[in-house]
Image (cartoon, rainbow, N blue to C red; front, side, top):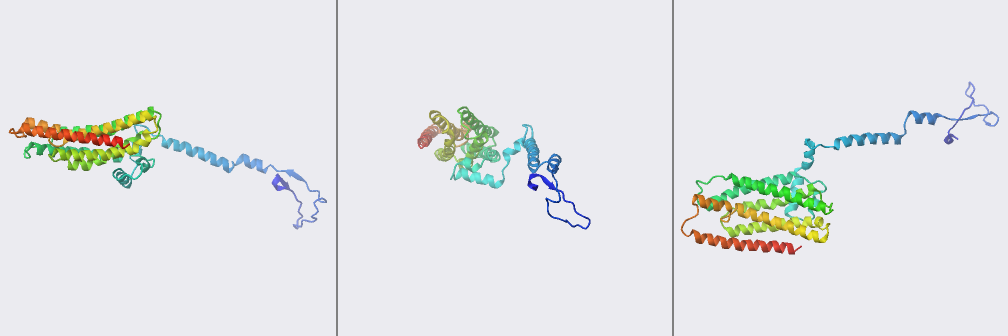
Amino acid sequence: MANRGYDVVVDVDEEGDLGHTDLQEDNLEFHSSNFDTAASKSVPTNGHIGSSHKRTASSSSALQSKKYLWSISFYAQFFDVDTNDVLKRCAASVFPRSNFLDVLEGNPDLYGPFWIATTVVVILFLTGTMSKSLAGKDMAHSGYDFKLLSGAAGLVYGYTAVIPSLLWGALKYSGSEAASLLETLSLYGYANLIWIPVALISWSNISILNYVFVGIGFVLSCLFLVRNLWPVINSTPKQRAKILLIVVVVLHFGLAVAIKFLFFANGSLANKKSGGKDGGLPASGGGKGEDTDTDDDKQAMMLMARMAESAVKLL
């Protein structure tokens, strides 16, 4: 009966003797209990407590998760990685074993891409200056050309920020949600890692050798980009996916050519200006030497073009 909400009222004498236990003879009366009703009005149930607590927690978390563009916390979320995460992603970009977007584990960052791009800029500036000095044959009077620094910064930062943003916009326009803007920026940023060793070894005045180094850097970084971008690009219509893939390869080839001609060897634009102004190149036999360099440049350019064509055919 207790389960039905009733209470039993029993008369007990002063000695505590229950007396007769025959319920029919004692005329026991049963009344509806209002204890549960009063308790429900005064104290909410556990479910109500939990729901109200959840509503409070969700509202507070919503306030905490709301980040404004001008707040530091808004930009801190793009750098929420530690050293182990960055090293793991650098290793995955050089020795890819799985899709790089899976390596990011839903937490893309801009910390690694920023410092990789900055390192590439500084090394291009230093090695480009060395290449200019070797081509000018006047190491004592050669100085730093800070135009190379601004050129390297504009080229590397511009390529790393603008190209993936445009690609993401094209994917968004095509209805693809396979990668976010931050993931695309992170992918391109870590792809620049290969240019650090390339820039370190491409400062010599042997033009054909520098073409080989730059060509290797182009092939490795391009394959890394294509391998990880193809599943994303392939989510768009087939014809558009092919066009986007070709654009990615061509623009990356343009980056490699710009690095070669702006910074390294006798074919460098900076070195040609240096030779014209300072007379660094020898006057006698200069025409023949320039013809030889031009022939080497043409052959190397044809080689890099074939490498780019082969990379596209592999896809």
